[in-house]
Length: 251
Image 1: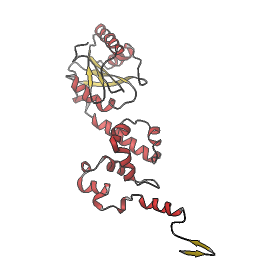
Image 2 (image 1 turned 180 degrees about the horizontal axis):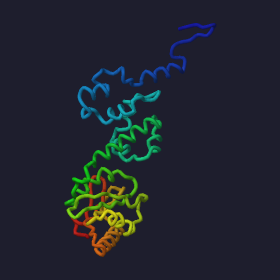
Image 3 (image 1 turned 30 degrees about the vertical axis):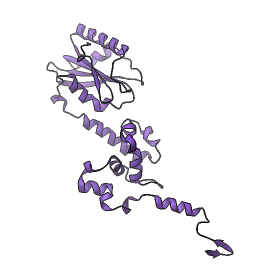
Image 4 (image 1 turned 60 degrees about the horizontal axis):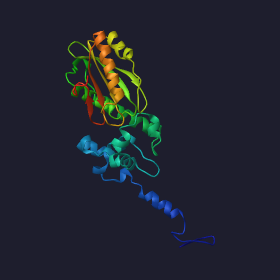
């Protein structure tokens, strides 16, 4: 008990005791044993030894007044959060809405996510051949699997099915994109493609074709035949799976 100018103070009487208790509960990375600190753990054991939350903590670098970077990283990746939340993010605004992520932290995370997507599908185009639908799906899966909008692409091939290039033809809302055959075959003509593969994603995760998908495929196949630029396949990307019109003999 402390007396100050006639005021008697007993520990616990003030609301400040609760505030102090809250601060003491904050996990501070530098107070952890060396082997539990994300950066030191990475240096000692390599990145594969870290959890998703620990890797994210290294990117975040610092936390907030009430949470360390490690606590924030764990919260953002718990219960499948890496897949359910972060993997599907493509805009800065989606990250800055998360408490504890300002523009600087959000930019770092967004850049890391995009690098991951690009690395997952990175191959020299001059060495990339599409001999089957599975190869096409593996190439497009990292790019389209988590996209929240439908994207329609055309893959341009030479006479040996080597990739010349890829073009995004259209990007729409969650339910539809607008495609015209001339938009698909224009880049094929410009780059002297011998054949094309078209592809798009279903943000719902279910790759099975709709009636509109089937109608569009038939239209593109007919246009390709008349232009002597055959459509070899139409691949629909879902959540970790795909549908091939060619494999299902639906071309």
